[in-house]
Image 1 (cartoon, one colour):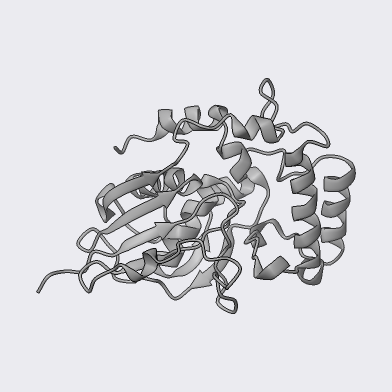
Image 2 (cartoon, rainbow, N blue to C red):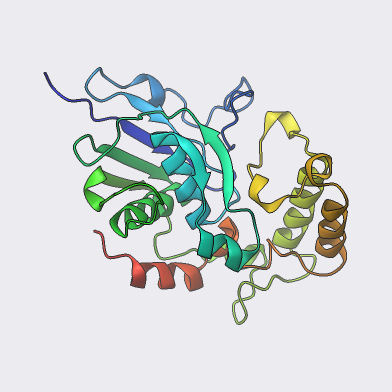
Length: 251
């Protein structure tokens, strides 16, 4: 019979992260509307939910785990370089049989467009430990309203044009970063919205005194997340996308 070729939808900046105990849509927030109902038996529509605040690399790693199944692995070199945990959440897998013989279609909106390109790049470079992957795991990549060359909006939010990823103090981006730290510290979900930043060990309930030190540093000095090259806002800049576009060989 005809093989299944799932269509995986990937949201953009500030999309809710997937959590097994909490729905990603409600009467107040339904990112994809009716799109998830448009699939067929040969091409079912699946929704993945990487963190809406994490970097393209981290989001791509989360996507891989959510689709294939297993524990999110951000990679030894990457996690050590940026100072967060190597492993994240575990997933059952939206399409566990995913491989070169059973490829998928990827559709990304906004930052999701860059995310699916980076995922295919990581597949092409065989970046996922324990798996032999290739770009052929993906049938097609579709980007909807995605700033594939970066967006000037990132600078309007506070990224310093001459010194990114440094952020202007008290800019919208800086204040959003402070709010993210506070919410993650308390480990609460505003209106059910999950930040999906477990790898940064920000929750006081899970990480104790270390979380206090991280929060203090973020609010009074410098955030190791907001002012690093490992977050969604920086990856939306022209600086970041110029570098990514040079390294991505898949088309």
